[in-house]
Image (cartoon, helix red, strand yellow):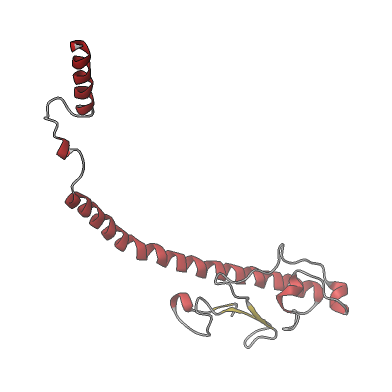
Amino acid sequence: MNTDKNALTLSLDRRSTAGCVKVQRCDPRRQGFTLLELLVVVAIIGLLAAYVGPKYFSQIGKSEQAVAKAQVEAFSRSLGAYRIDVGAYPSTEEGLASLVSRPSEGLKAKKWNGPYLEKAVPLDPWGRPYMYRSPGTASDFELTSHGKDGLPGGTGDAADISSQ
């Protein structure tokens, strides 16, 4: 009976000292982090997020502007190829859809050699359709996106992107 009691004492002693360094004394109250230590770590993480966050989100706005500019340039090249084949730019009514599908009738339908875009005309990076007008105010056509705010004019992320 004594041996069973000793075995029980040994197993309890082994469990209570698991993970403790032999040189230090194991105090069950010192086995975790204090609230103050956790608050300091959370404060440091918060400061880092406050510093890095705005820089990260400003890059997203710049990339949306770059995507819109690249799409406008690609549409302009496709419109140039359309004009070479058909002899004129699509009318405002025909719009950018004429780069993907053949016009229904007339001389343009006979000369059309498309599609001039691989896929359907995408929306701008802010989810609105590009505005196409032919003839444009300063050239044969005008292709515009009103930026993040969707209103004419603006600066920064809200600036208009145009083929002009």
